[in-house]
Amino acid sequence: MAEEKDSGFRITDRRKFNPDGSPRDNVEDAEAPAAPPLEPLNVATPSTPESQATNVVSFPGEAGRKREPEAPTAAAPTAEPPAAEPRADAAMDARAAQAKAAASAAEQAYNQMRGPQSPHLPEASFLALIDMFAAEAAMNLGMAQTPDGNRTTVDLEAARHWIDMLGMLEAKTRGNLTDEEASVLENVLAYLRMQFVGASRK
Image (cartoon, rainbow, N blue to C red):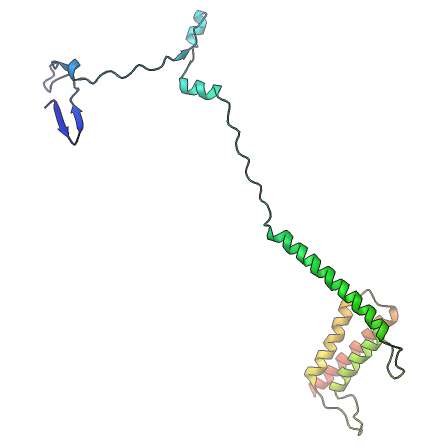
């Protein structure tokens, strides 16, 4: 069967020989029409016999690609920080400036209204702060006396809190204290810690 139509497709037997090996008749008629001629190749004409041996044939597609300028590649987009970050930094700076201005205004208002130092209270100083914390620790260790002459009750948790507060002051102010302040704080801490150890063993 030379031809068969099925769903619009055309099938053609283009074999040039029969199954027994004899040449087929009308092979040329069964062949499909010749394909359209290809574009001429870009072949350089050799000028010398030596150049014929090294003749290079370039196909139109390759030659066209070589002649065409390469399209500039799009630069990879640079990673830009999210727009929210600069705004957040600016907002934080604005809040910090406002807080500093409010603190300065509050200090000025306080200095105008505070009045003279009371004679019944010690002057504000680092040594007074140490004395206040140490007194709280000693009172909770049972080392202080009540107005009726009895000892205060022992509260080891509260005593530990005030001793740790003094230890925090020592760590945070190390290198910024006078020799007197550093010595007083070191001696008070050592004394209170030993008292705490003794009270814990009872």
